[in-house]
Image (cartoon, rainbow, N blue to C red; front, top):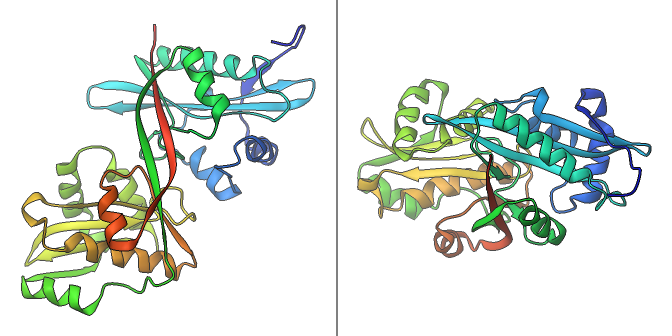
Length: 306
């Protein structure tokens, strides 16, 4: 820490938004925030807690920002350091450490036993720390965080995304399967399906369902819902695809490919040139079917509190 540096932490106010965004974009070049995206990540978070949204000020003004969230997961509270940045030229002065330490203490007071960095689904910016932020990948271990697995985002061109091919649709129809865009009346049945997959998909898909038109596509055999795909449910306006899922008994029929093509056509119609596929498990599926490639790698970190 710089000798005699006075760091003042306070809660974030909406009037800080423009300055915060400027400082963030200077220091987090791989994750730029526009006004709408900043609002979504901070004030629209379902677990927004103003006492966990802090800015750091010195004589130079606002030079740092940190945001934590405490989420209910089954029968426990899980803490997340959702966002953390210190302005260029003000790093290595103890500002990030002060923000992190205070957020950890407040998360612990809310019952969190652990803290993870990023990956605060359903409303998250990144699934970990981009490995190109080398100072950050050194900072977190020095603060007691242990590395977990890596995660990746993929990207795919939307140049030729015009929806499912006639042959793919015909194959599904021959198996008695039809695909259509979801409506709000599908919400209950869709949520029943989402609960089969676990995780936090319900909230993210609900956001996709609220878009006009809904950015969710469904596959049915008769009245049985077999699969879904969604987009524009998180990081809205960036070309975000997912989540997507097919029931175990219906896998291998080509449902996923058709639903994926429906969503990619939606993203292309919105003017996006590329689709972002985050936190990917089946890398081979997206590479084979739409030529997607891994373009970002993230290190996941976790710290046990107390």
